[in-house]
Amino acid sequence: MKTIYAEIITIGDEILYGQITDTNGQWISAELDKIGVKTKRKTTIGDTEDAILTAFAEAEKRADLILITGGLGPTNDDLTKPCLAKHFDCKVTMHPQALEELTAIFSHIGREVTELNRQQAALPECCRMISNKVGTAAGMWFERENKVFVSMPGVPHEMKTMMTDHIIPDLQDFFHTPVIYHRIIKTVGIGESWLADKIKLWEDSLPEHIRLAYLPNLGQVRLRLTAVGSEIKTLQNEVGSEVAKVLPTIEKYVYGYDHDQLEEVIGRHLRAQGKTIACAESCTGGSVAQAITSVAGSSDYFIGGMIPYSNKMKIELLGVSSSTIEKHGAVSEATVKEMALHIKELFGSSIGIASSGIAGPGGGTEEKPVGTVWAALANGEKVTTKKLSLFKNRKLNIKMSTVAILNLIRQSLIQND
Image (tube, rainbow, N blue to C red; front, side, top):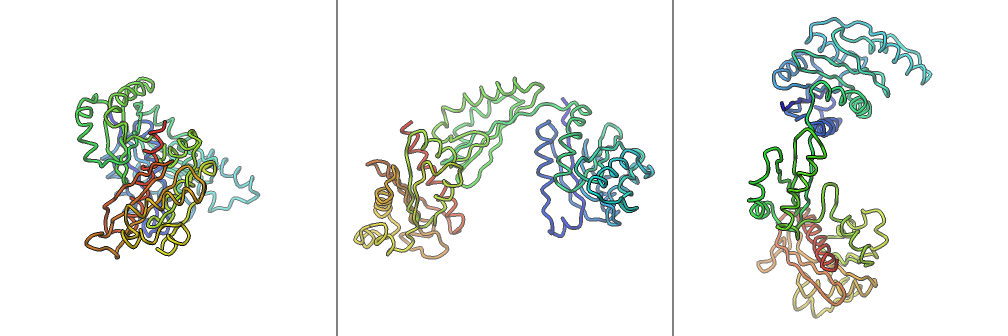
């Protein structure tokens, strides 16, 4: 089955100048991926005829499908339509259906159609009009030598409606696109290279139509399996079989699939086990609590937390022994053990979490350099600790520590399942 390649062209000075963020390209790419079309390139160009015509000509050489957003307004700086007419060597004339739909929209909102507005209904004669149900700029579909150009408004909700209702179904018919199925295995607590070593034999034995991609991000690695074929059920079964093969090798690192989030998985475990949790966070500054409470319904299991940042607060509010801090320091296994036990007792929770570290960029010593973080989890009578040796970047250390602590919670909970 032939691979269909797409190029996305975004037109507008406002995007080049950074005044508007282009969110259209990401959304379009994701929708094309669902129907088996691979985005080969994304290009952003300004409102100049030469740049637009050059982009059209180059894209037509590289891709089977060219999707264009922007430049369809009624003003002089909107050049997409005349440039497409020039590229395809045809005239721009008034399109009766486009004018009828435009007039209906203006009538609905109680406004008169001006001559400038009427020009939006003028389209290149060589295109097929695409209706715009939620705006005034019609879309345009061009075909030449088995290639397709599609021009859409830059307004996101107009573009998305047009893509969903008309363009995607028409592209599937025109190109007879394959089916693409993705399955994502989400892991935590293991680095990308270590994970790759563990699953190398399995990866090497994957069928040719199933590919694996590693997507690492801050203490987590997503394994994306992508299968290409003609029937979705067959692909789902084949990918499911491959997941079942690799799972025994990496099961202890796997926390979920596809859209699962680590904090959501933790919440499900806590609710299922009828347990509650409280946090005493020093170096993470409340980020663990924020992650846990970002989940709807977390009040079922999250009791509360505190940020005893100074030693004084650790001693006076949380109840850590002053002798422990004097002997071992605030960033130590002994201190976080007491913090976890005291927060659990103070808040009456099943589980207590604690963190203390040197996030940086200053404050480190030879014995305890920047990036040294201690975490503890008290679950019943058992206290588990973990030492992290991270980086010199403060924000990165906080994020990495948060993920590691969330994983510590997950590991404690799955032992009780």
